[in-house]
Image 1 (cartoon, rainbow, N blue to C red):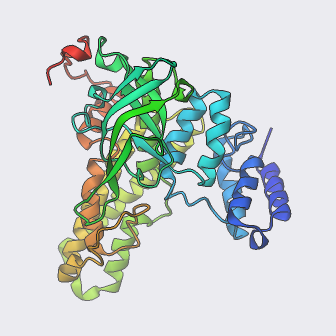
Image 2 (cartoon, one colour):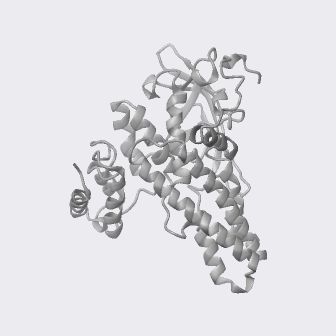
Length: 394
């Protein structure tokens, strides 16, 4: 059984064979993956050692202390947090071998083709079609929207309707789409921040081989649930230190600008600080639960808390800083690699936080999930549950 001492020995051996100062970044990351130190809870040969997930921090601490490069998780977060767990659970041996290593090293960026203009909160109502071709593959036509990293991605996790004659949740299949294939068009979506962090993706006659399907035909909703649960954990349950993240920025502002302090703002900051700390500790508990198996609906609660706190803290900061809170460094139209909530100014944080209650599942939908799956409350009436998708009014 792999324990902390064994992981330290393996990490030391990796560092001795590939000194970070004398080894190229990509070469080091590949060697780390092959040594099973990428995500230690994954199987051997797939970047892991079948070790407890909680021991990943042992490896990370040793490598950070040695100045080893990381895989830029902010840039490849969709691959790490959503695609990889889904491929591990539902992928074939060939699919795992092909996709997991370059995903983890960052050689291949991934995006998520789930939401559509008419199927965001009600994702199962999606209309993108995948039809069998003469060679046994699939031809996909449709439109996806709010796709992070589509302009950077080589691969996409995609859900499409393969059988419109059955109820909407049962006629969906799950695919991996090559974003470089003919028929894939990516267009930027400019946001309130001025940037085009998201995209809309048009799929016109895109051919996907059946070997790129994850899970059984018609069971894509089941596969997608794994992706969505991991997505919400990735968004709302990331590890941060005490007084880290946006509450840390707000506290720093408070200490640096005593002339702007008021009693009311002080009381609100204290309340937000306590809520942020409760959310942080809840996230730690959630990560401990993850070591015991797959993520559950609790991740939806964490994502809810993250969205609300981000918006309230950024609103407090803008109010506290007065006219300085309205400054915004750059309105230039750009297509960034990721989101930086703490490295930008208050104006950016305030605007960008507005999307937190939409992306990764709207807060309204997540409230339903928490009510039904965590609290056990009666579900909302669903009159379309047993109606074929083709017969639903649109």
